[in-house]
Image 1 (cartoon, rainbow, N blue to C red):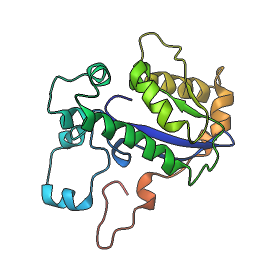
Image 2: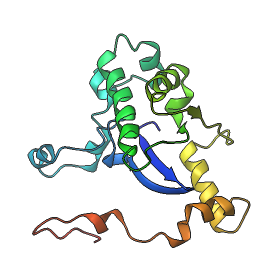
Image 3: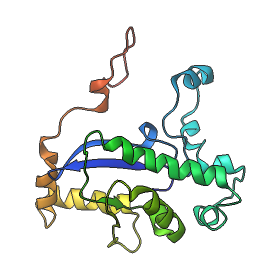
Length: 189
């Protein structure tokens, strides 16, 4: 991705675990998951806070691009290491659910930057074979391409086999179903 990172574990064609967005580690733009003590200290905070604290902010440059980070990673070593460690920890965490992955697939804007793809591949190769997914779309982002595949499959089109394998029609519940906080009623739960 760009702002957030996501890591999914797939077993038997089904997504069985995942981390991403605000539940994953730091991305290029975002802090990812947030320590509860930090959340308490921030009190009420605007949602825009969720789009800060990532590798870009750590660099100290508001105008830093992922390409510049990759090209000058020695100059921004703290940001570079934060990004690579986050991805590596995410994949390592998925090993609890999918112990011996057949392969590890890279996708998203950052994986199209050769220096980043090579560094991530070098770190992840200890867990299994790493392969970059080729994108079909020329203008849409990978997430939009994935949404199209799912939507088209749900409508019974050529990607129906993928949707059936993922068992998306049988998916139920929300992430809020698994949150148990004493004395707290969650909105939307």
